[in-house]
Image 1: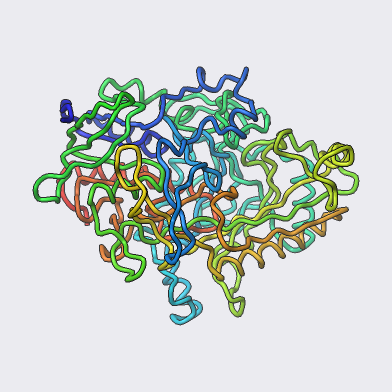
Image 2: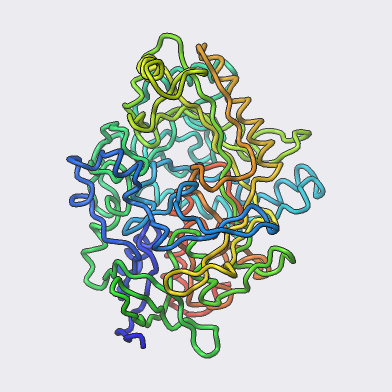
Length: 587
């Protein structure tokens, strides 16, 4: 029997970016808020001090900050004819664990989606014809527009102190910024990061080949900054320990450095860590949530009553919690009916390895979002007529830190060990770099999430099953982008260059990105979406799913975090200004 706790106004499942933003906004409004987090408490000063936070073996290899499969895992298959098997070691993607979630270990790459991304299906059908898209491609328009989201992008970037250079200020193109970006109401909060030699050489080659390079927008701060919550942040030291690491310098934006110090001042906010929410509880009608049930680390079960439930976990686990709670109709990959689990998508990346002839790049001087990019081949920024695919991505030179264990570039044909390998490593380390493309992943009828019929977790609940593979559209796009990037790489006058376009089938044991999207899609039609334009459940009006990229109808050619943060603010405003005044469906 679960122990029943005193009622709260709001219970938040997960305390990452979205959970912390919503907790702050709603606690500031006077609501009694509790956040329940599966992992441990994490704090910058005690968990990521510079004395040991830059430990590649502990954090990058042994993955100290990440979820363990024994806590929660899922099963995977490429298609419906296969039997899905459990993922017993996370490697293809790396879900975070603990307070801050993926906001602790991310790189800080902070991109806005294009205006046309928000009306993707109608835009592509309008430009190329209704019969141009593959029949099994299930992309759809977002129920919000770029113009509606712009103020919320601005708020999140100011929260983070994002470094960059605007390319479009209120409709006026700006020299040095991204000429393809949507309009911005203000300049970035802090100037661009300083660029190293490799990024400078790439930018020169990009200009020679007719492109417009610009500094990557980064939530690794170029200078000291105080955000709108009054929290002071430091200047990036270019240590190269961003990806998979916490930042002990208070220079990489995270819930710990941007929100939690202000949130913890509210006496009406509390957090319950190392406790897993097992289900959202519903009343007898099934149309209203009464709170959640969770289990703590000792195995004791609790019921937390609440007026509003906010599902703010990692994208994949948002979907599983909705399925386990019976909220929304589960998606059927055979019939295409149902919504929960529909439109799962990923990311489509590739690379071009370059070894320069006589340059010393100092690749260890880096941040998680350090480099020069081009956007000429993202979204529909270029004509897709006759190419055989849709979508695209940004590309460029990104220097995220050539850490010594995992960074050992050598020329082709070098032995994999021994004296020759050691000699080649020493000679090549300073001259090698990797150019990268970061491409879209559109949604399809046969790519989805559901509950596995065989495998269960330690609590006896079905694991979630992922069915996913790359489609020809994405593989053709990757080949196209990789060749365009290689043309710029050749203009850098390399001693050696090697292309690695994305190949199928998708392999869940090889890391690509942790950008899992979809499954609780937001939309204008309950037949094709789980939540409405305010991230509110169509079926249970006091349940909102603002927690990350699970609401994306498909994934675009950018990192998702800026849009995730913007949606958190968008949902917070809808709850404060509309729902609390008249609880019920907002659409």
